[in-house]
Image (tube, rainbow over all chains, first blue to last red):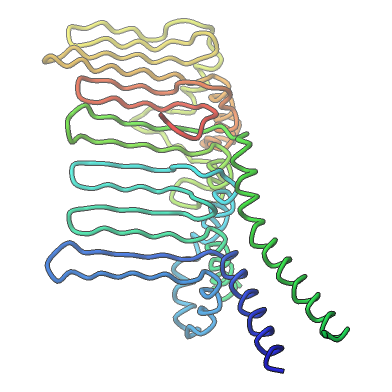
Length: 143
Length: 198
């Protein structure tokens, strides 16, 4: 009996793991270079983001949807187009103090910013962008 | 000894695991397939500054991306991939392009001065602009090369409008569009089928 339970648990865990791997992860890290600066490091399975949005109060979601309404179609088309591209460097800008790089790597958009004040790294699966935009559209004023 | 019922459950579980692992590989395989074929043409912008800690800009954008995204932007004078052009400084840009399009090959403007030269011409299906500055030791040189098919496409929209998406679609082959050079920096805008600007 215990064996069956363990087998069930192992199977469920493996399935959940495979699903999370397939959906990718959202990574945000911010390191401020000043004394006592903030160091924020987040690694969230992308699959949890749309689920988490269901728990956001509707008025907050509506506010975000209203502000982003004009850009949502552009975001959806852009993310779909970027998703079908091969891995590539899209933008790289270097000046005396700052460095910004936006790349597409393995289905994710990766944004790196380095400046004397802080180092920022953001990466997220492009499919997530489309899903989040679709969710915002569904609660937006045009829906 | 495992009972037939348990065997079926094990089989179902293994099948589900295999399906899940296959599903997890699909995006990776799709990504590899996409990497293998690069049918897109890319618009590149490259700014290099010769100074030690100078500027560096690299932009690599597939034309198909711009073609799809432009029509979704509704901002100011840009709507549905078309931009409304008013008369700026008394110059009717649309009328000017129309005049260039219908005129025979030749030089339109040639200015040779002590501080620089400017030449605007229509030649071999291209609108060419060459400018060179010789002022205070400056060696700035500007070259713009616009295929006339692009001009045609831009004018295909209605009055007071330029169809940017049609213009992008009309950009064919590998071509150098803009080059700006001076003693400190180089700016290049060009098209090719590579995703990198190296």
